[in-house]
Amino acid sequence: MMLLDTSAIIEHFIGSKEGKVVQETLKKEPCYISILTLAEAKGWCLKNGRDYGLWLEATKKLTTTVNIDEEICEKGADITFEMQKKNRDFGLMDGMILASARSINQRLMTKDRHFEGLTDAVLI
Image (cartoon, rainbow, N blue to C red):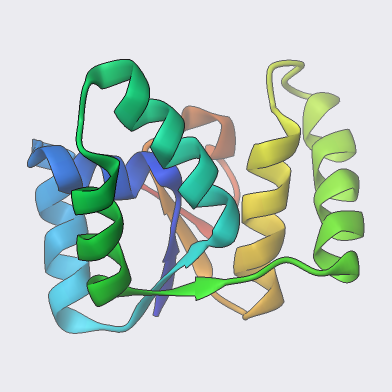
């Protein structure tokens, strides 16, 4: 099982080379997304003239959504603080999504190089 970062699910949606890796993963095992991915994906759809409703419908069929709670919020802030020591561009949303993956003991599949070097991140 795997939690898909926003970058991974968008790559799947546009059918890129990296998206094919996501597609194969979705075929083999249950996958999750963070509730925060909905906000990031809607922003991406608006910016790129894509149909968010279509994206949302397809994504809900393929994944289970992980909601955030107080513990995930706190751990997301901790992760962000630690990661920003190495990379000032690491954002709170990234920390929250990684905390969401860790909350369900899953690895994070991502295209985002901010996660490079983490043992629980799978870069595509």
